[in-house]
Length: 145
Image (tube, rainbow, N blue to C red):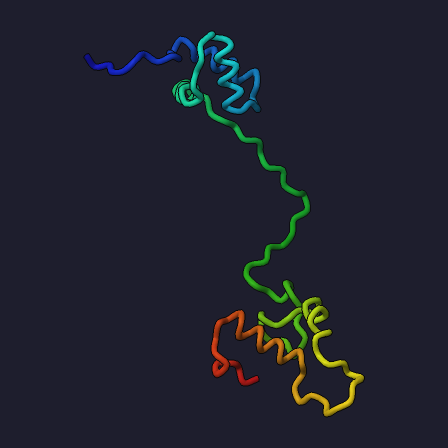
């Protein structure tokens, strides 16, 4: 009394038929293979039953090789200067890019207005705010430069 449960719906005698179905449709999904096997044997099957039978029959999925570009590019590791060019006054990665500054610069006073010229560059002030927001440091921890 070694066997328990009901007998399997797919036996070793069905393995050649499974291999033929898979060979006829190599790109078929498990549901499509299950439907084709059901049609051949005439009984309903669960896809788990078919998956276990395919595994027992030694059928494995062969994924197509990934086609690579023939042009080889040099690899860049980590954050390099090639990622983003900084102006001399932009020393930190949290500094605004030129595109970001173009969107924000309209919020500040125009250069043709009257009054005392600013002591510090507006862009440097916004960069300092971005540094605090992006790093989570306190104002006292700001770099002195």
